[in-house]
Image (cartoon, rainbow, N blue to C red; front, side, top):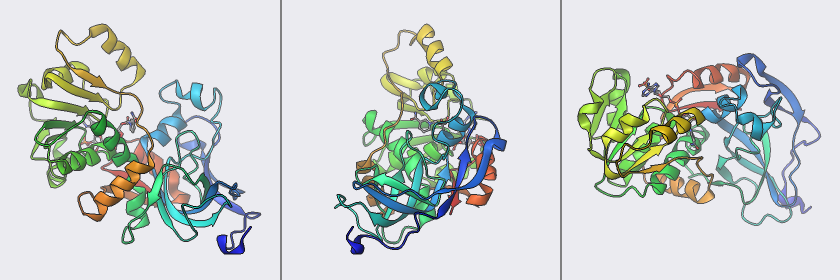
Length: 333
Ligand SMILES: NC(=O)c1ccc[n+]([C@@H]2O[C@H](COP(=O)([O-])OP(=O)(O)OC[C@H]3O[C@@H](n4cnc5c(N)ncnc54)[C@H](OP(=O)(O)O)[C@@H]3O)[C@@H](O)[C@H]2O)c1
């Protein structure tokens, strides 16, 4: 290997990582030393500075919903290092990598099928779903962008949200919701956010022109009003989304569980013409570049709920699965 392509990384030395070697509660998480990966010729070795604990991590750890086991291993997770996002610095490049060089600061997805973000180092394909960080972006901010904004961007693009449309974001203070409010506003959509009382001011500060408080307001008084209803937390009954959306509008079920999909298939759409968008959000390098550009133009800012060092990652998981977090829970290495 060309010595200019690498800086000293002791790959024969262990690195620290958070492991979940079984499915279960917080007690299955432990910090351990594992071998530092060596990059293959098409890979970059990244020193991770920050990651975040997201719904993907705690759902995978808990095998919730059950079909997680079909994909990630029937009895225990095949990939014990969780962490679907990262922000870090390239420390070594494989011989075939031309896109990145050592010292590049990158952020994005590790990939749901590979995971590995809750560790000090990761080797990723040079063609992975990540992009260079803006020079003045902190690693903490960068780790809080991919999950919420990447997911929100995926669904808003699929729904073809455009200028002037009325968009309702349900769960507007979560990682996906707080990102969706900002992205919809950046398209000049007219955003109505829905949250509990304590998050109303925050959601308004993110760019919502109107915020409904689901603990006080009668949401059903807004029937047939929205071009797009984006349900980000899986808490609003589908029939309520159906009542809120205009005829020929779009409902995004961003967090639908299999039982909800099944129930919806029986109840149908009550004769109303609407498009329903669901499924899994994609991981895209182009989206990360798009988000980096928006961040640079100050059109988006991730909301950070809390930050924990890797050693306290179990606390980060507890916060992430509480359904009370506001934006993202970041983990620093
Ligand atoms: N389809 C996909 O590919 C995909 C991708 C990413 C995420 N997801 C799913 O999307 C969901 C949301 O993820 P997230 O990380 O954004 O969640 P999150 O950050 O954990 O959501 C927390 C927020 O949910 C709000 N909330 C809790 N109960 C609520 C209720 N009954 N009504 C309205 N809001 C409520 C809370 O606000 P208040 O305290 O104000 O209520 C809190 O701020 C997860 O289930 C995740 O699995 C799916």
